[in-house]
Image (tube, rainbow, N blue to C red; front, top):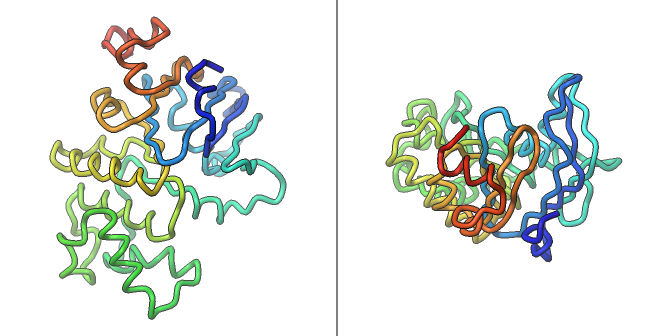
Length: 258
């Protein structure tokens, strides 16, 4: 591990010697990383370098991929996610995920937010408060509070993405994974999502995959550079962007390749 990784003294997420294969193809090669609580960690690197594969290891989404094989250890608060007896449904409640393309359910705004809490036993009398709290936390309540029974599919792209963030927040996760959440959004919507992510780290630990170097520099506390399935460099964002240790990191950040 690099010095920067060792300096994360109380990690919430700890990854040790993580390897992953899709069939015969190795997609992750011996990844070790320690991610601190209440921080934003950006994963950068060219397409196909393992960023999205890595982030999906943090809530076992790769379990759904045929012929996927994983070795190594991923721990949250010291608990091994790949140990025996892990309840994957419960894990994904605590480690929420927001995808690249907004994916609201074809139902009302209200029912989108209430869907997860209902599954986890939240009572009808408490649901209005849960829905409002989640929408407020996702900075969208003021825009849609008068049309909660309207279809979520009628919202703009940026609103749909914030709705999906609210849907994730409604089940009270501890960690939120973002897989390129702004790639399909206009600059104004992107700015709102970025501001939201910075605010959310006060309560949650955030890991975000992004191809946008400026976005990583603006919103993250730590940055990890991936290349060809390997973790090349990981450290505080300011250090990685201003004084990278590896030449390949500098080349990628400055646009010389990738």
